[in-house]
Image (cartoon, rainbow, N blue to C red):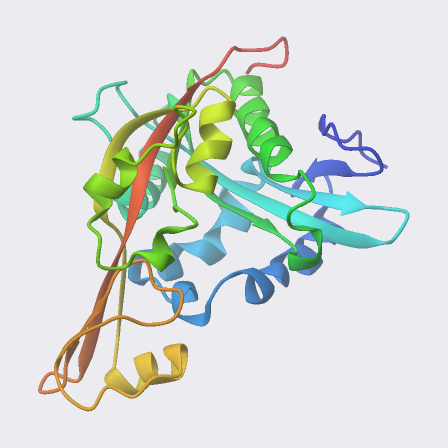
Length: 263
């Protein structure tokens, strides 16, 4: 059995996809449990997601409860180039993915790790796995000699405020000085700093009938619609038979310390 990554939760072990390819398919099944259907049809993400296994297996990891023979969580990240400036941030998660594959094709060395997703089985949510997942992702970046983990954070409570632009939402704070949003708060408690709200991070387009199927709503005429679990409205153009949605994210950064394993 492969040596697991450090994962500080009793009874659980983390492995990269390259270490435990036998766990990849069970882990991928988590996607349908975690994500709303519409969120699985990104224009850019959909075109590249299936390539992560071949191109970046060392940067995807699974968390397993081996006693229960169950995959309980999965983390996705991708090495990218970032110059350390706000101006140099990728154009959302779509830009990060496109840039990472371009970098790979050109044979250039990455300088940062970009988080893509953390998926925790619904039955295991709320029991303290979020922080260890982020910490494991950061440790992967440090082990590869990367200086920063940048995360286009998908704010988990934003779906309750779909008409509020991401720029003011990202500034909302609690009385204790931590971000209002729970997922941003996880990152902040681990030292993550907010860099930039990104209103057009993930693009999803589809025919009107596809959007109706993804959301369970009817869109009788063109216009802007709020829909279940959407972080922002979808724009419906019935004449063009097209629905267009841009999911907002918030860029956050964790500074990493390299380890003896750095390559």
